Length: 318
Image (cartoon, rainbow, N blue to C red; front, top):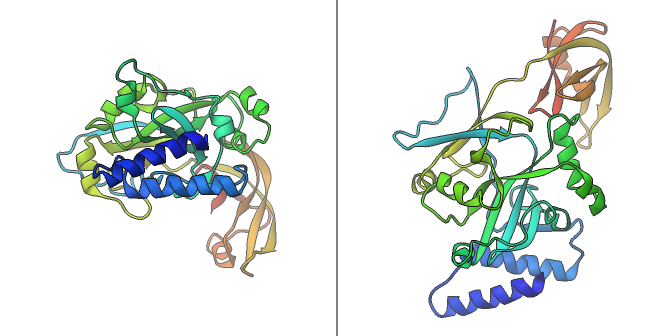
């Protein structure tokens, strides 16, 4: 793999010194750093930088938040899948590397697994090389059918498997939702192109997979880039979500634990319940002030949600 990327980097250097750079400087620097990292250590459990940062999405909750105003810029909507986000790098149309999202800047190398569920080569006959020359980062979600209990954790956990055969045996799908650098002038245009090789978010409703909202984004790349981004999310897209409905159960006891920072925090021990396929028997109670505010007592009934579909949280006494 490094032999191919070194040949590409050599081509980048030649193009740069001849006055026609073929990749942005920051992308070149990240590729060089990744090659050097790969040489001094094992790819397993090593962090590599994404060629392009993977931003999060701003969350807009129904009846609580005001959605961004994009004026006359046309927007498109898609399902927000609930899986594990990954980036896949192709160099001149050939699979190079796959990374977990990590912190958005760098992630773990999962190439040995992802190569089994995505194309190894992107070809379109005579136009293939022209379309995918240079570095292209495809971003998307690895998902499992919602018929599988706790399917989000099932998909995310698969990325950490050391046994590639075990990964291959799992019912997993990669669904693409982004490409950088852009090829066309609009996001939908690029998604239709990617549909030739990948499952693509805009080309289906994907009801067989878990979702946690709707994504709105500006279709025009020019308008999208003009809106810019914060350190956390682009201003040209957001996730529209509704608050999860809670499940009522009994508070059996309170456990007090000291965290790494020395702060003592209470955890509620609950009569086990099931929320979105996960069995919940513990939930955060934050602090003593929160317990007093909700007037919680051992034996009382409480409403529990999974905050962000992940962390169990008591929201009120019933």
